[in-house]
Image 1 (cartoon, one colour):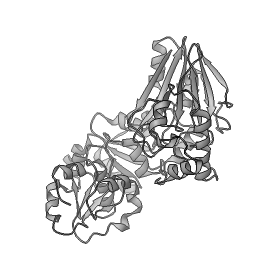
Image 2 (image 1 turned 120 degrees about the vertical axis):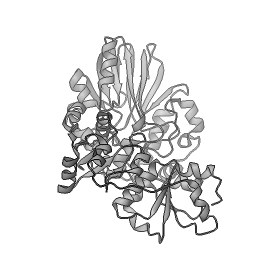
Image 3 (image 1 turned 135 degrees about the vertical axis):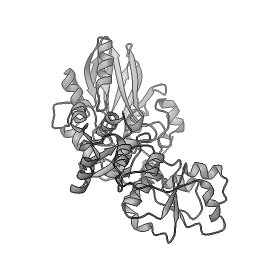
Length: 459
C-alpha cells in the first residue's frame, strides 16, 4: 500500500496518490496532472479512479484532464451535477483499489455534495480518511461557501455538525486524517500548519470536535468571524463543474513575449490589469504606472483571486526573467487563463526604452519614532482583523488587504501616513492598489510589524 500526500504550498492544498497492486486512486488533483501520471507510469500502475471530495471553489481540479488521459472514472458524492460523465457515489458505496477498499461517506456541510473517503487496508482495517474540506487539522470547513443554492449557512453548519458527529467522530481515534487544505486556505478560519493528523488528536485539540458541544454552540462558533467569500470562488466552481482547457494548452496560448512598445500599446487601447509579480522591493523601486503588485514568492495565486476577483480579466504580466511559465501555470490553478502576454526582457527592457515608471516610498520602522509623542492616527494596518486584535499599534486604522478595494473611501488621512502588514508582502499589494486609485501620500514600512516589534517602539 502506498499513500502519498502531494502538497501544493501556494494553494495550501493537499491531493493524494493511493496505490495497491498496480492500481491507483487520485484524490483532489490539481490542474497540472503530470506528477500523478509520472508516479503511476514509473511504477507501472494504472490510475483507476479520481475521487473528488466536492466541487472545489478555491482551485481548478485536474479531474477532467486526468480522466481523459487515463480513462479513469471520476467519482463525486451524491447528487453532484456536472456537464461531464462521472460516478455519483452513494453513501457507503465501496470502491476497490488492488487490495484496498475506499468507502464514500457522504458528509454534507461545507457543501451539499461533500464526501469523505474512508480507506481500509489489505486486512480490512480502517487506515485513513480523506476529508476534503469537511475536517481540517485544527478546524472544519466553512459552511458558507456553497454556490448556487438558497440554503443558508446556519443550515449548512447544522449539516456539518451532524456529519462530523455521525460519520467521522465515530471512527477509531488512531485513524489518520488527510485533509484538503492546510494553513492559509480561505476554506476555513484557523487551519493548522500541520497537514496530517489523527482523529484522536483532533478530538483533543480541534474546537469543533470537543466533547458535549451542542449543535447550537457549533453553529455559532463555526460561523463566527467569517469574512465574505472570495469573489473568484463561483468562477472556479463553474469551471470544475462544466469543464476547462488543459493547463498545457493554456500555457501555450498565454506564453506571449511582448516588446515594450506592444505592451504599452495594449495598455493604452483596452482595459487590462498589469500584474507585476516580482519581489516587493523591486516593485517599490520601479514599476509600470497603475500596475498591481502580487509577488510570485508569496501566496500568489489565492491573492490574485482575492484582489482581481474576475477570472475573465485580461492580464499583462511583468515577470522575473525565466519564470514566465511558472507564473502562467500558477495563475491557471485558480482559473485566470486570460493572459495577453508578458513584458519581454522585464522591467529592465521597459526602462531601457526610457518609458515612464513609478515607485513607492519605503521606510524602516524607526521612522515611526516621530509618532511616539504625536498623532497615532497615521498608520494603516492591512493585516487581518484577528492579527490586528491580537497585537497592533494603538489607534491604527485596520483595513484587511482583502477588503482594501472596497474601502478606499475610508483612507482619508490628512497628511503622509504609513502602511504595514506583518512582513511587507501584503502591504506592498495594498500600496499598489492605493496608487492605482490615486492615493500617493504614504510610505510602506519595510518588513512590516515584524520590524516594528524589533525596533521596540512604544506605540
